Amino acid sequence: MTIDSLSGHSFTESSASKNVSLYTSSFLSPNPKYYNISIDITHWQLKDLICKDTVTSSGILYPSNNSIMSLNIKDNYRLNPNSKSSVTDSSLNSFNTKRYKPTKLSRLYAKFDVTPRCFKEKNGVLVAGGVKTVGGQLGSFKGAFGLHIKETNYTKNMDLGLMINNSVNLYQLSKNNFKSLVCNNDHNIFLVDIKNNGQINTNNYHLPHSLNYSSLSPDNKSIAVVGDCSKIFLLHPNENLNSINSKDIIQTTYDNGFSVDWDSSGVYFSCCFQEGVNLIYDVRNKKQPLHTFRSTRPNNHSGAFRCCKFSGGTDDLLFISEHIGRVHMIDTRDFSNHQVIMLPNVLVDSQDRSILHDDTLMFNAENENNDFHSNINTNNDGQQQNNYLNDPGENIEESFHQVYGWDIEQQI
Image (cartoon, rainbow, N blue to C red; front, side, top):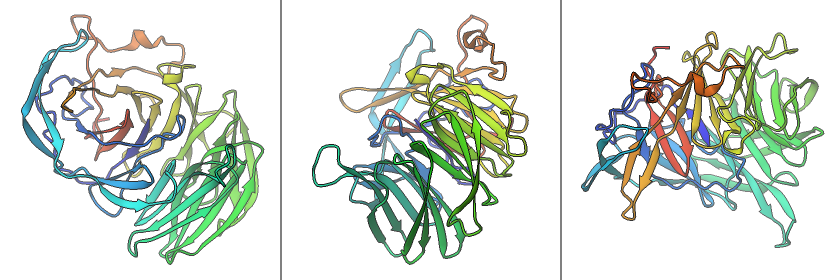
């Protein structure tokens, strides 16, 4: 499951679920939005598969086959008058909801030679990573890298690395210069220099493990890297980000790091591990994590942490996604306010008519010894309360090939 913050974007409220009145959290908007699209997931562990279109005010980018598609989430619903139903669940209230279908199809943004397994976009420049079979021989692969420049509709496909590219990130260093960080299973992180005319130069730095994710600090002085090991690598590049001058190694007790991100100040960085543990470090004191957050299903496939993203700007939020169905939202001002949101269950019948309902949990995960179930909010009847997520702007989560969006109020 993947997440991305859309703070700063302006959206009109969708009426897709106006009749749903299950949400009681003071932080969560009662009007979630559901977008029934097909997102290709070509690797069961790689779930960083949506991002906002930074050029438009209403675009969500996602992979489909060999393409990146753009979903317009502004005014994208019309009522299907023949689709109205009622759903009753033992843990939910009965409710009626009108069913809506998209009025506008997603449009093609870019097309590559192989299916993107990861991608990022920044100001009209999009990079994608993946893997391709060489010569049709089973087990013979090369890393694939794609570039698309929206303004000129320029697309480039090239080989990069000896194995699958697990993640790409993209940063704009100047008006005409972008830098992409690419993590490959061949133990290399590639520093890809991209000019706005499409010229590409690459350098690589070798580490002793397969690499899953990397993130550049806001001051461009550190690159946090995680991979198939218990270590976190902090690489310190030169001024032009063309080579690595030195590195620090943080040893943890967890295996297989899958995501890392920096907050906007560059003081904190977040790393999540497949065992369902997320560590927050202060870059000024890296000996011990500042905070530890745990999955609702630790050491379980469904509860594996896959993505962590700071919201950026002044929102002061951190989002962490579990493998299936649950998203953690943490107030980073003091890291004490922590909610867990269960994504809606979407029931689709043979006529492709969708109904929304949700069941959301909130607990204090700072107390690592707490039993999760003892911290679920309950109502006066002893039933679970349904709490829903709120965001200053909008945040998007992807699971089961659908996209969900919430408006979040600045009440934390």
